[in-house]
Length: 482
Image (cartoon, rainbow, N blue to C red; front, top):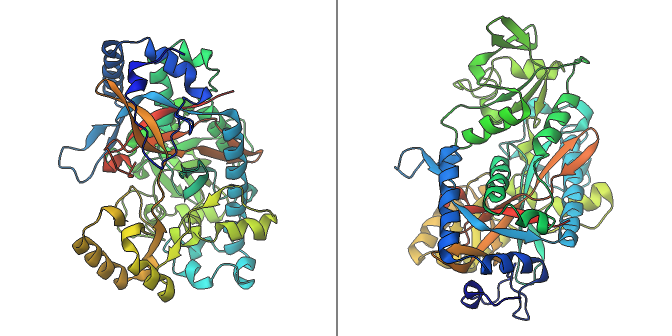
């Protein structure tokens, strides 16, 4: 391999698993072709590629919305041109682990909305379930098609210093980010057209067609062309770009609550030629806003009477309502027990050790060690409202303790896991930055399919462990090798 000017200056972070750089101070085999290729490019060429990527993101409107930056609503999603590469063996392991986990989570949802055996057998405490704001009594004894609750999920994975994969969290309500996975690949094809086939990179572009096939299969009416719609909260939602992208790629209508109406327990879409019955709703609206007659009466985003139509079996909703109880961070701690209970198997993917702050003993231990902990709200998302103990001042820690004591059930704590690092191209040099991985799994009547890749999110600030786009993170194309 040619020695590269970029590589010479690359300094791996101590005691952190580096995706590119092995423990023997050599480039890992699966990164060699990429490093060889980049070595032949001048900094000027790479800067031009980086500039082209930014222009493509901007011209195609690949943006997300930040609610608190005061900079207007839309930002382009920062993209790093160096791909994150995963070997075939690593991917096979991840895929097995995610399928096992989703099977158990799905069985858990069916169980707690029906017989509640896992509660009666003392595996998961009843108060954890009933105190969860996403446990919906309206879903009790409701039969969902094919017993599938979680049709679409994004499971966040990280690696610790010895390369072990851990599940950081399960996103099972309305997981977002898949459009960035698809767009990142399209941009990479423009930047490095010869490199993808040379490296035998597996394709991710089948995602919309697999999703569309699964949505078709859920139609309650056995007809040749069921009507499928994607229900969006509208243009001010942070993931609106994704809603438009997925509707376009699947060839389905993008609708808002005001475009739908319920009549005689059936859902209809208003069209220029009159009302058209809707069979499947891929909703990107949270549970509490879906039906103002059942949930939040002030909601303008949902459809009055939707839950009645759903209960009657006249429309399928993807993901099923009430799935949030399974991705509550307090319930997360019990997923390994669910896998043993429902599947009689040992978990393939590990959980990060998690402390429930509703438990006085655990809370006391965590309070003594807050500078080594990450504390999160059990139903928070987007990186908002977290305490990163190692980076917080004494005053911030004291204020956060007061916040916890107001409602301890609402918080969990985890030890600070040192996310793995991958090379990023920054101002003409390769620098290590922390990454996570969100693979997307699609659960249909034929089983679980996971496109080989996912969204690699990057903490672009030096030393940062926060990868969320809302907190200044970016993303990379994720290559899974054949």
